[in-house]
Image 1: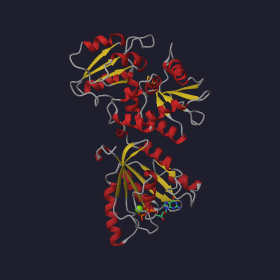
Image 2: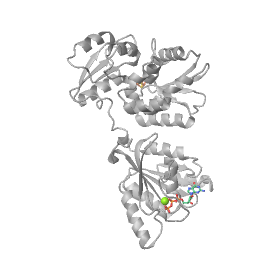
Image 3: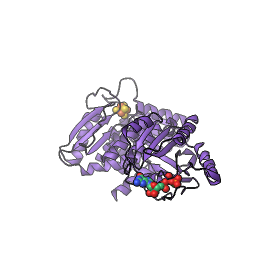
Image 4: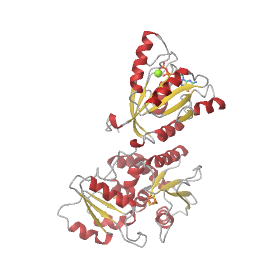
Length: 409
Ligand SMILES: Nc1nc2c(ncn2[C@@H]2O[C@H](COP(=O)(O)OP(=O)(O)OP(=O)(O)O)[C@@H](O)[C@H]2O)c(=O)[nH]1
Ligand code: SF4
Ligand SMILES: [Mg+2]
């Protein structure tokens, strides 16, 4: 995690009057004592920075600032330093308390607006003073999002994460590669695309197209083959490929044909990394071990394609999961926007690769699962796990493999 350069992290600033609980909020979010908290107004004098991996947003840098409502020489110096932070954040959190909003806070929001920085208003200390409805309605108009919370009890801190995810600039989510970071320029990727009766007539499906396009952008070579031609394709190469990517449904045959030293994964697992959160979905996959008869499993797809034949979500994944667990599981299927508000009936969510959706929405779903205590995995991860080749399919992703081993231990 510390490997992400500072410049690539989303910068999130915490602003507000002295003593409203900015430092307490930073500590609550990070679950660490990053910034000094005290009842004395003006405790934080210089900006305090904390790089972290913030679920569900990814790598961020929090900047806790000095409260800037006071006058005098010291106040002016603090104001200047806090101003400098205003100029370099991607997201602003204006922290306040019920009944305290005034011209000072309006000024902060106006400065952030002028810089086109999205603003979340965080009304803190609701354990001591709840936010009245009329004030909530009034403040809601002033910013992109409003969250009532308590840094002391932790109530509402999850809502703040969700609000930050919702307002983060789109380019924060676009900076990743589907596959080209795994194959060097000039290196070869072998792509296994079975043409069976579920394959659409006359074309490739979107995850396959995305992978081929990204390999071309990365100036590497793509060799596309059906599963039954794979052995011949590999034999025709004068050097081993940097990566083999297969349709998850052909995993077993491909694992048998690809030499053990060659990294191998599936299109769907690449999608989990590109469009979701691979480490979190890897950890979620382990919940398969805990499934017992009559447990309910939610199968969710982003697009609303019409299921045909041995559809992967309706037929194959339920079959593989029932076989692996030996349990009579209950499956519920949802498509498109129909992701349930109440996740509590489910012991596991199996999501598709989300190739047609956007990453922010997928991260929001992962976040909601997390808040509800329901593990979430994806199609390719579930298939690899049920077929006993999970570790092998994660070899190309060292941090996800590490997350898996840590969760197992
Ligand atoms: N009851 C209650 N008290 C809180 C909460 N959050 C912070 N406090 C208290 O408010 C006081 C100020 O907290 P800080 O986190 O230091 O506030 P700050 O905004 O960083 O203050 P400066 O650095 O001085 O600008 C401390 O006594 C905290 O214990 C909360 O959610 N509920
Ligand atoms: S959105 Fe999901 S179900 Fe639809 S094609 Fe992409 S991965 Fe498959
Ligand atoms: Mg402080």
